[in-house]
Amino acid sequence: MVKVAVVGAGIVGATIAAQLIVDGHDVTIYEPEPDGLPTSSGNAALIALPEVAPIASPGMFTQVPKWLMDPLGPLTLRWPDVPALMPWLLAFLARATPSRANQARVAVSSLMLTALGDHQSLGEAVGLTNHLRQTGYMSLHDSAASVAAAEAEMSHVKTLLDLDYAVLTPDAARKLEPRVEGEFYAAVHQPGYWTVNNPLTVLRAYQGFAAGKSTLVPEKVARLSQSQDGIAVHTANGSATFDKVVVAAGIWSRDIVRGLGARVLLETERGYNTTFTDLDWNLNLPIGFADHGFIATPLVDGLRVGGAVELARPETSPNYDRAKAMRSKMRRYVPSLPEGGKEWMGRRPSTPDSIPVISAHPGDARIVHAFGHGHLGLTLSAVTARLVSEMVGGKAPSLDLTPYSLGRFQ
Image (tube, rainbow, N blue to C red; front, side):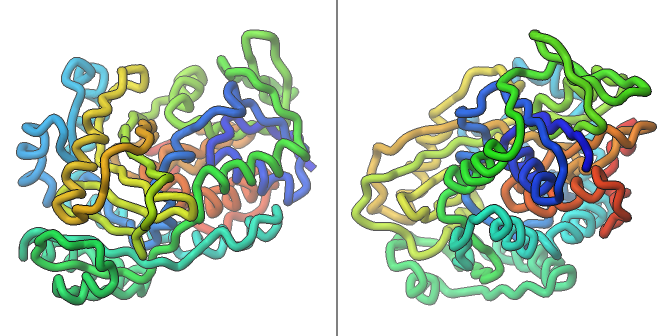
């Protein structure tokens, strides 16, 4: 049994803590807002197995100038924050090549191979069942070029993961979802997507399991320090020493990494959504609006409309006009969507290559890092938890972790 601290209790930290407890370790969780609503509470609720494409890809260069001219479009920058974001942005642009995009696809697909099974196994171990549904996913496309780009990407997914897809006419798409009444060119249906009933419910289930079988310290971790006796976790009120420490604090992980003298490129892709809980209807399956960068997902207790990417510092104030713009655009396709709902903003911790960090600290295997999952925090949380538990327990890794190493930033 290893005495281990987990820094962070979002979906990645909570699943890691749960897996470590299931595997017999003595766990202490550090989370300054244990009752808060982290990014994972407001995501699109998808187990998005086919989403292996990095954001930085060769095709993006023809789209980015148009997107950046629209402050409410699918990708935007908070321009006053650009100087702080510049190292990440330069690395992001350098990775928008065919070879690097393919490397990212291979790395992420290697995690996707067991992602669903890991969710099912860990859920069963903590008493969480019937929380996953194979809903599939349908994206709407406004042009032949948009469909061709989607087909090109789906061919990669078919090769890497053997997941099927089908291009549908508008009439065929409306048979799957009659509320899509607006005009569009065609749709792409992908049955390989799963949906959780409600991401907050799933998060609370893992947090609740871990809290009942671990020690919870409701404080922010200021830094870690290394000694022969172990790894010390320092907060404003003191410190405690552990055999090993897992850093899974989302965007705030970068402060801990830098405090250890290491380099990491981690910034926030901020996303916005609106959740409706008082509609007298819902969608049959998640619908993506491919040319606008957002998704509408039916939850068990409502409808969530959200997505897009806003690159900004974590502390920059929200711009909820982005959530309003998504609602307005959705009504082009689903006119019955009303105004109202509850708006929300979350901070996705993202690396420039869209590959998460699942890695021992350079030169000290007693510190394990697990962050930078971007849009795939929920999807990859359980497989990340299993891999981290293998590292903490000193087991031979079941997957080559080289692509996810923190060393790639050093």
